[in-house]
Image (tube, rainbow, N blue to C red; front, side, top):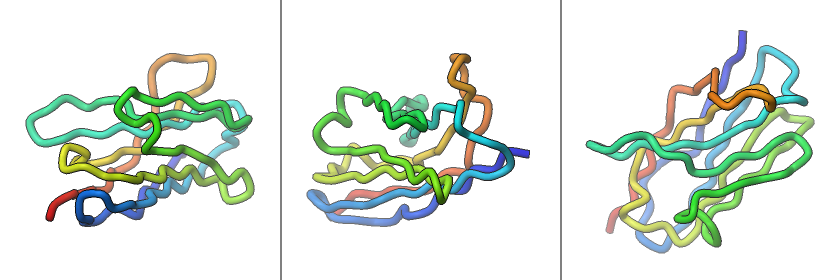
Length: 118
């Protein structure tokens, strides 16, 4: 059974940084794509970034230049380094996983809250 456990959320001032982690377990992820999504209050969930286990990554436009997704193969963990955070980045951030050949994410974590406020 696939499990994704996020950590690293919290409250930070505008301009600050946070690093989110997603520990994956339950199967081999070598042919999976891992993603980060977020959902702000009253808004739909939106894509943030994704990466496969060879390191190929994609980003939403708002994340380019500020966020960096990475993975540690040995630890089966995916990270999201977020810099220059803005109040509009406030949301619950979710880790997700899908087979690389599919389009929909099948597995989701429980989410971690990120609040950017002065």
